[in-house]
Amino acid sequence: MIDTPLNLLGALLLVAGAAFLLLGGLGLVRMPDLFNRIQAGTKATTLGTLLSLAGVACLQPDWGLKLLLIGLFILFTNPISSQVLARAAHRSGVEKSSLTSIDRLAEDQGAQP
Image 1: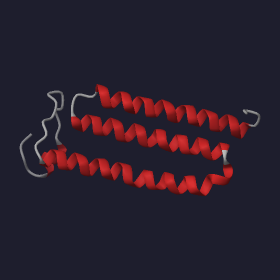
Image 2: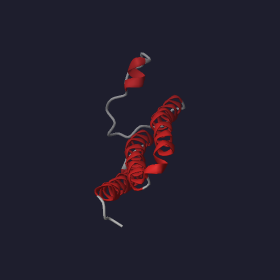
Image 3: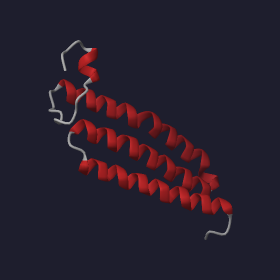
Image 4: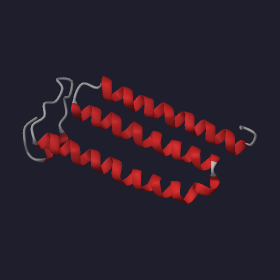
């Protein structure tokens, strides 16, 4: 299967994508509160998914345009959706971890941290 440099690159990208997806899942378990879990899940899974899509594009070049469109959709929607979820959780009063020392949204709204 790994007989050309493009196939090797595709395999490496798939492994890197799987590693980031694994780290994102681990971050969901290990982080202390909802806001940190959203951060860990969004950043790692976005990068992991994009790397996986790039790996598939190297292995199946004729799927490239479709994979690019999927990647762009994920790149735009994943961070926006996590920001909306975090803002909704903040507004509804979800408790922050005692380790969280900075609350920029409360500072922007004029509240005392």
